[in-house]
Length: 46
Image (cartoon, rainbow, N blue to C red; front, side):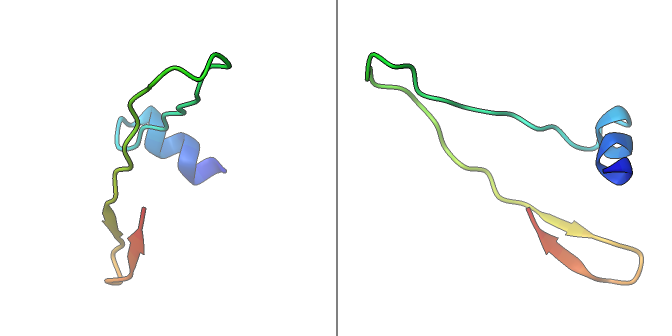
């Protein structure tokens, strides 16, 4: 959790939450995918 909070505080990560309202109106949501690399060359799909 500390790593996530540091990434957010540094402006390197954003977390966004989307939800549909109860009245079933048409909304817009689309996923975003990305890759994170660490110093050892490991890759994380986000």
